[in-house]
Length: 469
Ligand code: ADP
Image 1 (cartoon, protein in one colour):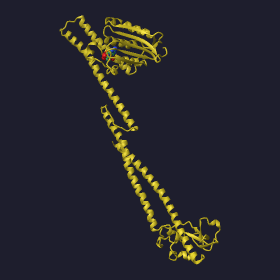
Image 2 (tube, protein in one colour):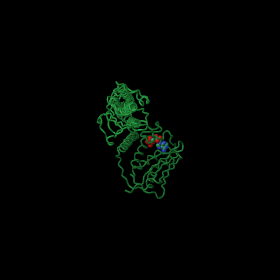
Image 3 (tube, rainbow, N blue to C red):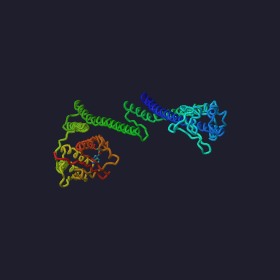
Image 4 (tube, rainbow, N blue to C red):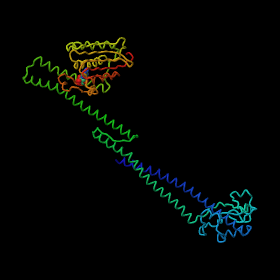
């Protein structure tokens, strides 16, 4: 929880810092540019006012005589500036400290000699054209009567200009505050969007750690978080399914061991107490139960070895026809007794398969045994071997009861029996097909079933043809 909260703070802080630094940078640059432009504008205006004043003087006097004192006396001697007023900006009074532009501009007469000194330009000094770089001509009736030089000094700001710049700075400050606030809100929203699913996942993981494996996290986003939640949900579903199967299997094993043990201990108790007489039939019955237990334990061992990848296979090259013949011979008698026609047919020219023949016989035997159990008298069971592009196909097809579609996806599961009521009497454990699949998988093969209820089933084993041993 603490970590999640700190992540929220981190994200919000990062967003805040990024946006504030953005605003600060914009404020800094815009402030600088505004100041520069403002100064330039001011300078231009003052220069225009200066030119207006000296032009008026020249018009009145007819020469540049006494122009310096006229400029120094400021606007008390001069009429209001022509251009300044025309541009809509009221001229500033003496309190504005910029009314005459004194000290900012020098004036040269037609000969280039300084008549109004300022900055580096001294009175009476005559300048060459090279030193008059930043100059503006003063014209009267189309004739150049003098030149204004800018000294490079910046105008002093008056209270109005100061107030204007202050307002701009205030604007930036408000913009910064607004952006900061917005960043805080957006940062918190973003942080919550990121951390909320994380929080849900953490809660679900804690619940799983506490043993509650069935967990689902609802995250609807399509991003990485959604992917993570999806992966988690799949993992949780798979874990809880595996756990359910494990529990179910333990219960099934206990149940399957219990029945034969109960029968045997019942008989033994009765024999010990002299309630029953020891007859060969009774011993035969107990022996059958012990055999059943032995098979069950052997099956479980095979499955656990297959699970651990330790199922040892004594592989050798075998002709599929030989394999079919051995299975058919083994079950011929049982089929005959049930009046079922059992046939085995292998396609001509089949390549040999490299398999553990005993294990594969166990698989085929299991399939034929199941077929015999589920096929009524007069039915048929066909064992066949064919081949296609991916390898050899061994199939057991019967004309028996078939398997209901809803049971089909489960029949390879451990302890799955379609008709649970019959399991006790017939000795079906529900492990046969699970073992068959484990053995086929260990051979890098696959096993499938197709079935139609009431018409029969076909189990097919696909074995890859690999190099001879
Ligand atoms: P079991 O040892 O109980 O037969 P299996 O794993 O071999 O267990 O089979 C699982 C279930 O599939 C059985 O309960 C059985 O009803 C059904 N089944 C298997 N083979 C056939 C078949 N050829 N025809 C109809 N049902 C079948």
